[in-house]
Image 1: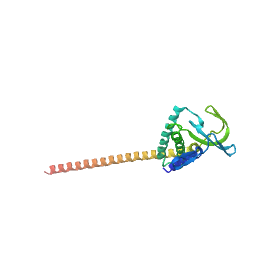
Image 2: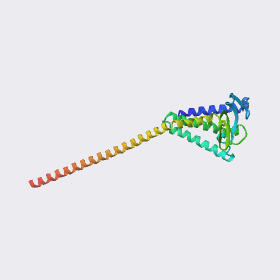
Image 3: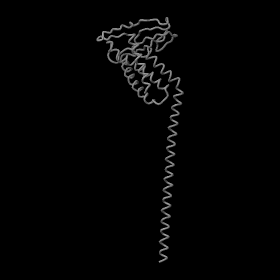
Image 4: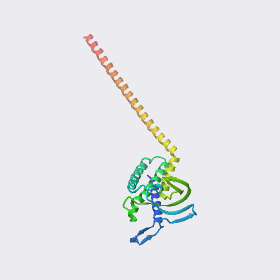
Length: 236
């Protein structure tokens, strides 16, 4: 389960960068970090790449499904994260490319889940499971339309989104390799089953042979005894 270290690293980096953007306050330690204000843009490489602080109210690409559906998204993300942890245990003996992909997806899912679940409480603007996801990577891209919205830049994203995307790409790139591994495992299991069946068949044949030989010995012994008895009668 060493792959979980990667998931943990993704969550830590994701949350640290989000808090650096959004700001935070720890009154009992007298710490108050302002961060960026909502909508602020800081150019990194001109307009091509910049930090832009936005809060995603719902799903990917800023799509807002409504408050009722948002609870379902948060709960589903929680269940999916638990499922991914279990799946990492299941594939603990598989290739590292598969484990790294699932670990990245898990880390990204948990990172955004923390925002949705706790940020509303931490920053006092919504109840549990109704928080907003902090996004800040803003990259120029060609114009496109998605979910009925037109974009002249790639939708603003965060470390967690990037981790999920990279994880999915790794799964796609190494899909054939993972499929071949599964086929090899199935072949080994089928071969082992066939061998076991053959061993059982051989064992049954051996048992039958031994039983037949024992029966023949008993019949021969009975025949010899009968012949001996007849000779004694004739002699008498």
